[in-house]
Length: 483
Image (tube, rainbow, N blue to C red; front, side, top):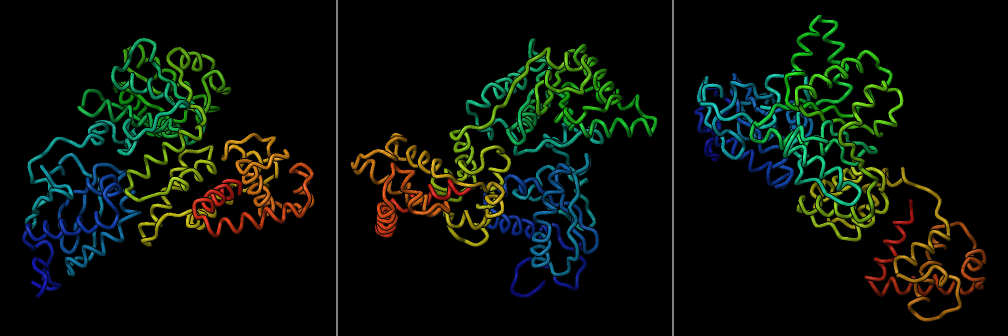
């Protein structure tokens, strides 16, 4: 043993010959270290399901239930796991991440409940436990289907007016598949609005207790698997495998437009499953009637069940999504930052969540609070992509909405503070965000003199230096307008 560190294995010993308890203790310490570094939510999402696997010479294997998790952990945490293992066991030269096979399931060997691994003993020697949910979904069809993402559940889906109908339909199918009027379920909407999330949620709910078998894949994968089956002369096996499932889910069906042979195969699979009382869930970027390029008979069949539209998000829904994600992360994110993001990134929830993830990661890595200034610095590339020219009319409208005054007050003669102060802020922002001259700005505010604009700019600048809350309001407006 190396002096000064209880349980550590020296360079002079083969790792495989170490007592199983020492390896388990080392893994428990590594897991605890990773949890403290990445945070509770991220750890639970990505790392908690890691299982301590077999040891072979100077190599230790960590097992994960799906290829999706294996690939993500390898790309995001692989180097850090290798470093921590090497610190615990200097003799260790390699950490291998693999997908769990049916025989590799220990009774309790997650990072929270590590199972001892004795010399020369594989995890397969430990009594089996029930298969993880995602693995059980795919056991019979692992070569055909894509893994379900454990993050995408009904609980993590934020419901608002634009998506409440699609959410309700998805829950109905998850609770009672093949219900009259809900087969097939066709979800459609723009990119990043939650179609894939709902499909994964349906699959996870249906397989939670192993009630039914689910096959989920993209339309692109369906096509490539079909082509592969033709080349390998295994089309009969391909058809039997897909038609044996209880629920078939195909994502991004628009990919099949123009692929006539694949459309025909999907049509026959569709009919076989529906006739057998099995559930089909499909997503696309447009409704069945608008998917020109699909065969008429297929579009007709897709539209005969429940068609649910996911509309573009509202500001309120974007705020709710950001609040839920920020709360789950455990990192304090000021309301003004959430409002700023919700105003700036309006078309794609995926991009919105990605922007917040980047802010949270930056805060965790550097130990700095999330502020409006940091947001603009960290997300400069995303914000730049949304750049557009700001007009004085837009500034007046945004400021009027913020302080709840009439737009006509911007050019009126009223001098009440409740009106004059917002008007001065609008003049200040017009000077900061546009290339208009002072006389031009004055004309937009009821033909006021340029000296009035100069006074407004000076007054707002002074107030921002003295009043932090006022300065934050002005700064938020400025960042919302800078697009």
